[in-house]
Length: 275
Image 1: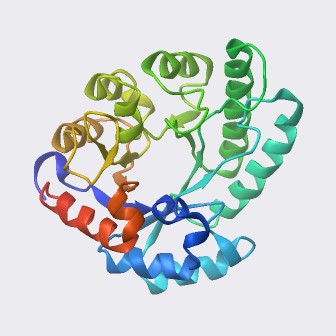
Image 2: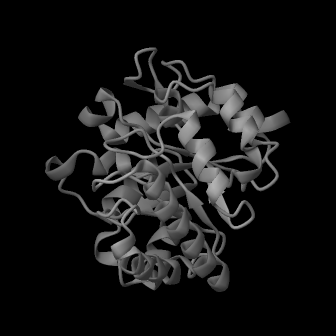
Image 3: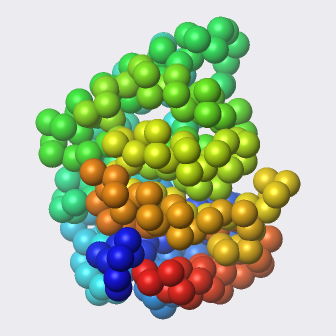
C-alpha cells in the first residue's frame, strides 16, 4: 500500500446478515466463516448477532483467532433509542455489560447505535438525554480502558439524520471522550456534503463504516453509487484518532440475495483503492 491507504485495514459489519431477519438462520460462526472467506481482516459484530458467544468472550476470542480475524468493534442498540430519561440507567447497565465483554479484546471499541425517537416530547429533550447517555457510557468505557463511539444512522426514527443533527449532538458530548463512527451511506442519505461533514468532525473519528448509495439515497454496492471512496480514505487517513479500520457494510438488494457474495465483491472493490 502507498499514500493514504498505507496501514489501513478492512473489516466487515454483520448487519448485512442481520437485516435479513428470520430469513437468515445461521449463527455467529457462519458469519466468521463468510467474513474470513471474503478476505477481511476484522469484524464488527452486533449485540443481536453475537448469539451463543454473548456470555463467552474467551470462546469468541478463540473463534476469531481460528479465522485470523480481529474484533474491530462491538455494536449495541436499545429499544429506548437512548432518548428516554426513565430508562437511562437500564441502558447504562447494558452498556456496562458489553464494555466488560469488549475489554477482553485489545483495541476493540464499543459502538453505540444512533439515538432514535421512540416516545413523544420535544426533540431538544431527546438530544439532551442521548448526550447524557453517550457521555456516561463513555465514562464507563474509559474506566475499563475501552473507547466508545457513536454510530449515527439514517434508519427508522433516527434523531441523527442530517448535518444539523450531527452538529447538535457533537456540541453536547465530550469531544475527548465520545468518538464517532461515521457511515458514508447514512451521511449521504441525510443529503449532506460527505467530505465536508467528515472534515468538520474529523477529530472525533475512531473508525469508519464504508458503504454506498445512489443519487436517490437507495443502497448500492460499493463503488456503484455516489460515494467517492478515495476522497473518504484520504480524509480519514489524516484523522488524528482514526485507528486504521474501514468497516464495510452492505444493505443493497444484492446483499439481500447473497450477503456473503456481496461483501466479498465489496472487498475486491476496496482492493482497487489499495486497501
